[in-house]
Length: 120
Image (cartoon, rainbow, N blue to C red; front, side, top):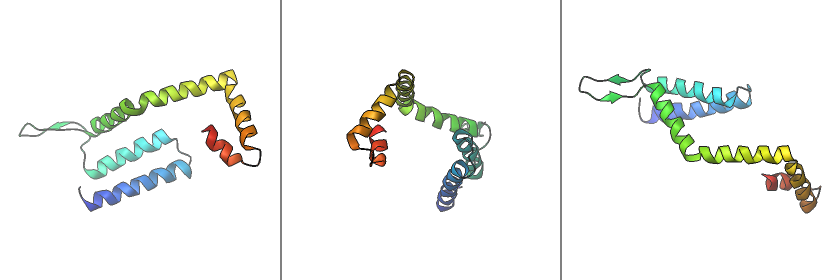
């Protein structure tokens, strides 16, 4: 499948993923993996790697999803891991609460949205 129908199905998959995560409280990893499997099958990607008669290799669904995941992880994975590590350290040491108190003192108690944005 190519062209406009594939784009339409892709947009529907994104909408379905958002609804599954927000409305039905499905874990994001499970929602992303299941919808990407479904989208791959609809798009016509074979389940397993195949070698055609002319010698060309066609990647299977697991290879395609794995390549996409590893590409994403290699580009932003280190940033995510370090952010989680720093957040955990801030939480365990109590520094996160001190930072929150400092930001609330800085912007005032009447601006909670601004305080949350600054903490982020």
